[in-house]
Image (cartoon, rainbow, N blue to C red):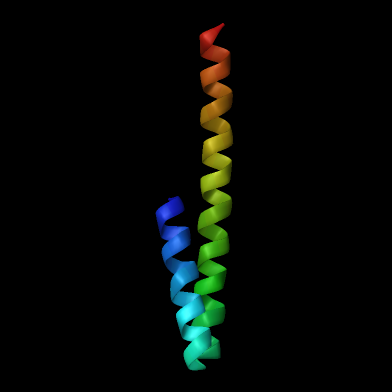
Length: 54
C-alpha cells in the first residue's frame, strides 16, 4: 500500500512540473488516501501483534 502512495506522489510531482494541475491534484488525493489506509492497517497490525504476543 505504501508503494501505491509513493507511486501516486511521484506521478503528482511529475504532473505538477509539466503543468497538469488537474492530474497532479487527483494524484495527490489518491496518494493521501493510500497513505492513510496504509497507516491505519500498519497500526492495526502492530496492535494485533502486541496483543497476541502476551
